[in-house]
Image (cartoon, rainbow, N blue to C red; front, side, top):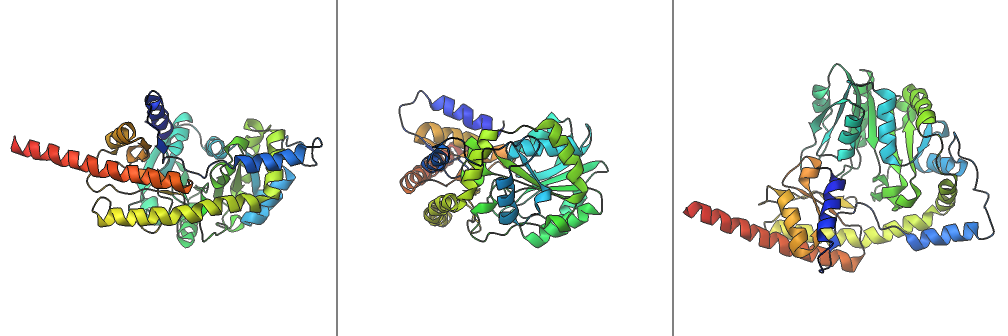
Length: 382
């Protein structure tokens, strides 16, 4: 089952229950609704602002300039899309023919597998092992096939939230370039890192595509705004396909987007304030769960999500359903990412809700482990 379907099904099952529930499955800061309304309201208070310009067959000039400066990418290598999910699909459509091969990571976000299936592509996976979830370039090369066209990784990694070594990424990109294979990096969590780096240099990696969006980094799903930074060897093919498939993004949405990025410091501050409070709370909680023998140790937190290994629970699908029904806390089971025994926790929440969610999750972990131990004891006695 996909992650989206699992969450939807779980929420539907809880609709008839009176007890409150806390969703530790969200993977971004909450939408900064009041801030968005303030910026958009002032911009349109006297009619259409200067940012209200056509984006037919082109990027919005204000958004393009902001992306270029923020991520140190030449403007001519930027292609804007209707979100990051669509960008992944467009890349596969542009670079692969049915039956060709795509390689991606496990554990990993299921949208990569879904997009490959929709395009009738062969798909296989290489391992990013816990607890650091790093990428071994040699392991990637061993998993390549003669018809591999694209390798997809996430940085920061989804579901762990951990960043990759940029030198390793650069080495991998060069190895793939020599084989005529594109490297696609999903960067939708990049701005959550306290040690922000702009990313691999597009000019130095002609086989590279980097994908981002406003949905995760800024909590602005309402704008449906994504982008691709595309290397020289791939730019014309991807741009030509985009002109056919996504040539008419919303003029209104991108006008609001232009106003948002013109005041991006306010939206950055919104995200930073939430994470500055949330991350230490979760880090302390994780450390205590490790000391109590409930979780395996994790590296220090970096993003807004984490992926702990539940020490005594192998079927995290059943555990997550039981947890939602009995304790009103929703986490995503590792099965949705190809890693049973893990759960993904999203912790970009306001403090009171986060603390309550972790308290309930802890109580659920303790109770469920006791249930399993009692079942094992009965089985042994029989």
